[in-house]
Length: 600
Image 1 (tube, rainbow, N blue to C red):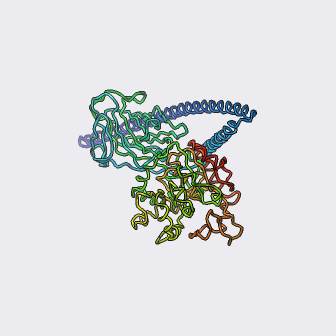
Image 2: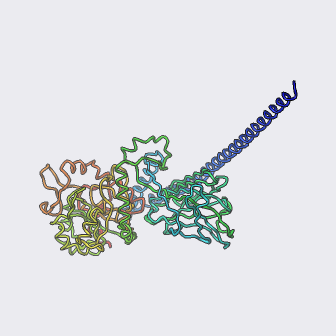
Image 3: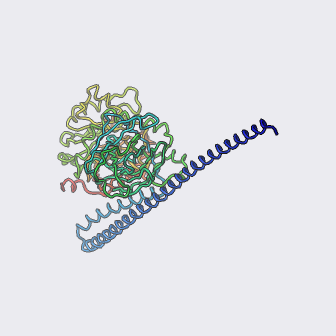
């Protein structure tokens, strides 16, 4: 072999050796990367296991508390029963009064049991939507013991992130974001994308603006993906936490948690903490940047899925009492949502909100238009809080009764559903303008522009509720909407559709129904419907004979609707009594009208 050939072979061998070393280096790098990924996966799996154990311990604690409270309640109930029995043996009148109270308690217990059964069985499936909070300079927020720094350099996608830069004071260091348009009733949690900077732990707190007693919170470790101290003051509420690593050190955190139901606005507080297991978030500040936030979205209830849509969903994969996400909205829900956005943007709800809890703890009378009120002296209610509806202005003693609130839920007063050119019925309007000047009025939002812009009523004497098609029937969805930021549910009567939700909103605790006969007295398709006034004065179209016979039959949906209302209001400690003279409504306990008005 000559020298040239020998040198060529050596060069070839050296190239092979170099290539092998490069390949080995690449394989080692891949192995190292794979090892790191496996370690990260192990860490996430271990964090998930620990998180599940934490939730299990938290759930076990909550269940133990619930059992203890139930035991205490049962003991108190037996004590009440024994006391009532002894009083009844003595034929004491107070015993009979307390027996009525016990019936109310039992009705409340039945309602609670039914609600728990619905949650456990997963039959109630709720649609959830994300409402994004845009992070930008000048946004509505509060920074506690620090300042907000807006920075695009932190996020590879060039979206703006906001950084909590702590000061060195001792105390809580946090961002507070108001969720003004989302009530405690409607809030279902929050979704974040956060990046730890000089602190790795974060406390997320949701609460209503009325006080600290209604809140949900959790501590999360943004490095290990561990969470701790999941707490909620709403014992029956959902509690679920998900943490997931994203690129460039960002972490997705989803806290699913319900608050106790009320109409207060809500807020989200993000607190920088030193350690995920610390019980207190108060400490000396670092003076440095604690964490960055690039996404904040509130999880908001968008209503229960209607029965026809429930059948389309594989409920086997849905967690009981937890929302189904990413459900495609049917056309009717899209239409409802659009109308709701218009309602909120108009300021109508903001104006209505001044009436929230205006009559807290008081009693009120809701007066129907049944013929039975001709047997009762309604002028005795002149000093009471009263609600009337639709054609009540026909009452001959309207001025003496002087109703506090006048609810006009019937679209027929303006020409019917979806009328292209709605106008108030002239006969009704002329009497309203002559008599009802003192009564504060409620109408469907669909007629706001027509009523106010045309000067028919002043904005000071009117408020508006969102009641329009597409709508839900109370008996079909099995619940009644009491959040007035959402569309009202149809209860077949203005008493349920408008008056009862308004009374609830105003904080009333005792409600007396008068003139709720639940009987139109119809015997044939041509027979006149029965009201307290002559049917010839009823100048608007009423439900068809077939519709009335179906809705108001002995087992009709009207009575199911009233049962749903009874159970729902009992959960909030609101007592509904039927003070109607006769009639067919036996869902509520009865009391004589004269006894009620004589017991102010």
